[in-house]
Length: 380
Ligand SMILES: [Zn+2]
Ligand SMILES: [Zn+2]
Image (cartoon, rainbow, N blue to C red; front, side, top):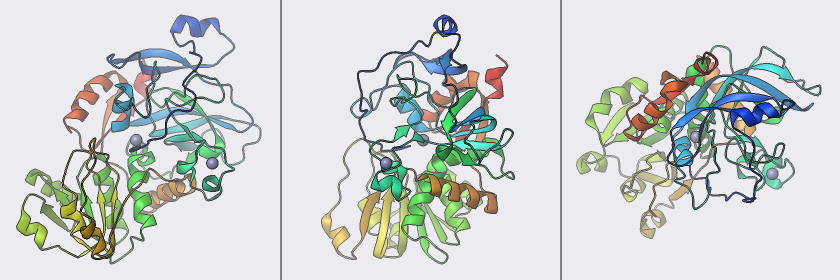
């Protein structure tokens, strides 16, 4: 999840017993194997974490795959200390696909054996206007899947780099049975983050859509834009990405450093999704929007972006941002992926390679998402 700026509410949290020997002394509390970082400079390593006893409203999953999101790395290394300081130990992971092992007595939507998924959120207050509108991602009392105050156990929530998780039914999604599960995991963050703004801004058949940056988010955006029946143009700085962009479904690829290529598209786009988190010139893209066109940011550059007001005023263009999506829309996205057989392009790794994967992620050395095969955690 990108650009989440809500500060943690309760910073004075009781620290939980998470070392193996302490967890064992609390024999009544269920535990799970997990990979956690003990500090901002530690590698992720095997540990044991508490998981709650399922309530009547909970679903318990054995986690099969968990995608690696760039947010995981930021959070583990406490790089968002200003807005979301990391509480250690930190177990990241919010692209979770698994199989239901237990359901509470009030559960009707799931049964043991079902495939299920959990994304960036595990709870919200369900009563505020945002929740009532199905926009839980904007709820002021929402609980993120990891590093957020845990209402049940105290301490903070622990994410998907783990062998199991217990989540309220309302935040558990159904996974279409035709999807490859390793590739389905990243849909829970990279997928919904790119699908939601396209739906919000009316991206439909026949529209012209631009995707800036071909990484974990961008490659999903290309697949969705293609499946929605649009004319898809990928903008990249690397000529060596042209072939892949076309394979993923782009109709055209523009090398953004070539001003003459950019000029050909001025005033022509209905929607542009910008997935670049490095510093870059967004005005060049705003100029490519037609009247009432929108550009949505899903990448979060560190420094403030500069936008000349006239680039928006002429053409009544708009610039916006967007975080993940609501639960109902996340289910809609998964169902859409089932219909169109869309998954992320993933490199499946065992959990033991997660630290190496982080190093490679920093070099964008992955096409296009790592997906951890959690069977590797069980075998250890
Ligand atoms: Zn994410
Ligand atoms: Zn709410």
